[in-house]
Length: 255
Image 1 (cartoon, rainbow, N blue to C red):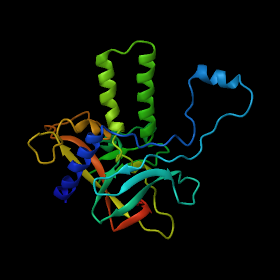
Image 2: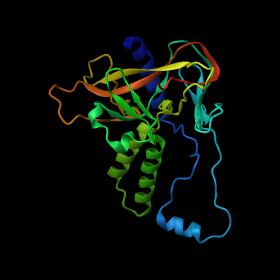
Image 3: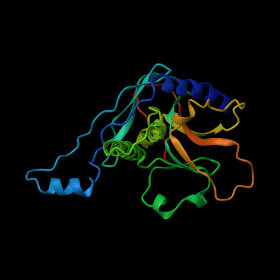
Image 4: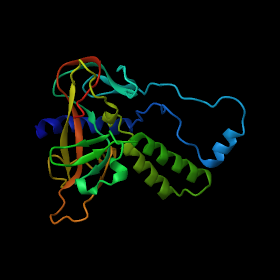
């Protein structure tokens, strides 16, 4: 199975790099808390506070001929929020995207802060856990930090290059599977999530070329104790279609 996944993943990453990355995220449903000085200015003004409406993300062309898009979910549930929609036709067994977030290689790395009220934790069969919560917010925070540093004149060319490299992990338009919802009553999942390891050895057939590695939409915490040489560059979760899909919202089983 891994060979079949790899044959699709490599062209997927090549297509991302060819476009130079693309932010897939719509504006947030709720405004992020502004800095204290901005909040004081807002409080000093009269009139209603601004609100955010549901917006649509970019149409994200996939190498297999369909497109993905983040927009308001079709599920009638107060917690459904955004969802991921597939426009066009997708064959069974197609790698649709990747689950972004922080990768915990062992459950002992999880803290109460990470676990509490977190419905974005997804576990692989080998015990690896990926936390996709607030991934888009982390992208916004990094972008804002870059802007602030540039504004105050405290951004060297070297620092700017580091910021740009760090942003690439948030600019993989297929790293959006954390937006996929659980099926509502009466509906079945049309995609599933599978673990996949990108290897360190450049000679390994599952090793991403260096120019593609920054587009992996994950960061991985290394265990405190590791008695064996590390052979894996990134442990990930990929999303694969279970059946023929045409112009539908993507759904996978959270349980």
